[in-house]
Length: 284
Image 1 (cartoon, rainbow, N blue to C red):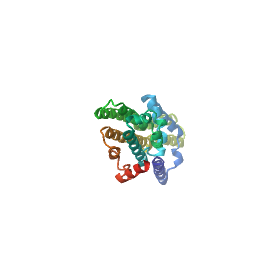
Image 2: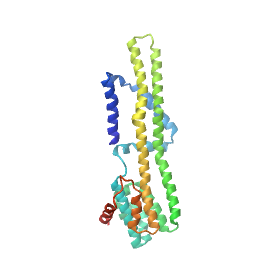
Image 3: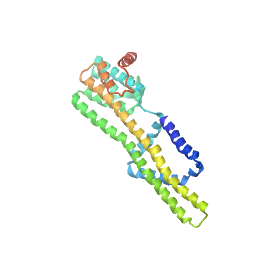
Image 4: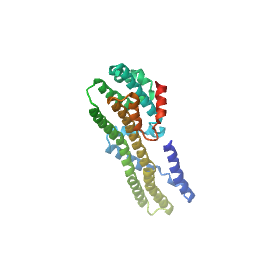
């Protein structure tokens, strides 16, 4: 939603201001300049990045229109699941949750929280570490360090696409200059012709510079910032799960263990203590 609204504001401000100053908007339509700029930027993007990053960047596009991946309801469901899982382990023993963590898709406990089950990374994170807990071969300090390594690795991988897109944004003004120089070359080749034609060619060349700068700072760089924020949000979500699991391993009750997770949340997502308690009672 923000992407659409922001894009409308950018276009309205630039085109509206240009038209209000007496400019002719039709003069800005130079499709071949866009072919040069966007084609060169795409080629450079493919050269600079492994195909995994290219594909990750493309896959992230739909998420730009759907908004933030994690909302308060997702955090509440995650805490509700962790509470139920820890409660089951306390009642039935760790072997009682072995089936849940081995096959999450077939687990009635996971299926009770479809938002969490749809999140592949979160589901895998919980399953992997609770499997280690069930095996009983790791102490809390080892588990903490291992979780940190995985979360940091995942965060860097998630940010790779955002950084790649940012580098494209940094290069777009230069590609705009390339398009403008090519336009000037075309203009110089037309010297001796009608002055009106020369003016049109010079205007088209200048549109190349304008387009490169506008696309870079009006769209691509802000999009890379959004992608980076989404990567950070996923890291915070995994950190919440980590806090719950570690608290449980250290012997805290299920209620207190999920409270550790609640404390890791940002203010925009964190439910109050009574709100979480109400949710846990409703999910029990």
